Image 1 (tube, one colour):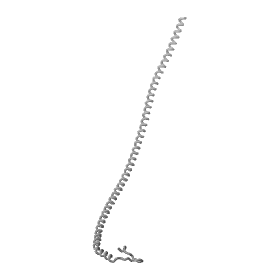
Image 2 (tube, helix red, strand yellow):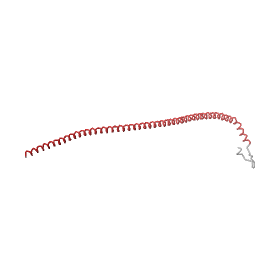
Image 3 (cartoon, one colour):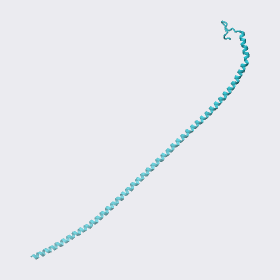
Image 4 (cartoon, helix red, strand yellow):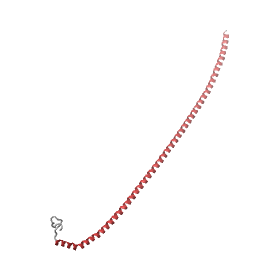
Length: 188
């Protein structure tokens, strides 16, 4: 009503119908207790809404704190799992190193044992070769000794045979000479 009323030129004043303004003020006065009551109800509802909002906020905060605690617990579990995994990894690495050292020691022991067995086999082979060589030398010596004895016997037989032949020859020559003399004497 004030804004729609005509203005006085060159001033900031407005012409208002007095009756209309008074009617409006009467209406405002009559409606004011209702407006106050509505405002009071709004304020009361506002308190309830604020309380509900506060409760809802408290619930959200409690849920957030619970979720944060859960996340922290989960993070603690993750950290604990990581620590356990690291511990297990280190333990496995240590066990692998120990096993590797044990295997290397076993291999070295087996190599030494194989070397000793090889040396023992070489020693036995050399001893066996020497034994075979001695046996062969003994056998050859016996054979040669037997052959020498046989040759000595044959030489004795040959000498005896030659002596026999020579003595037989000399005896036959003497007999022949004696026969030849006798023949000559007879022939004469």
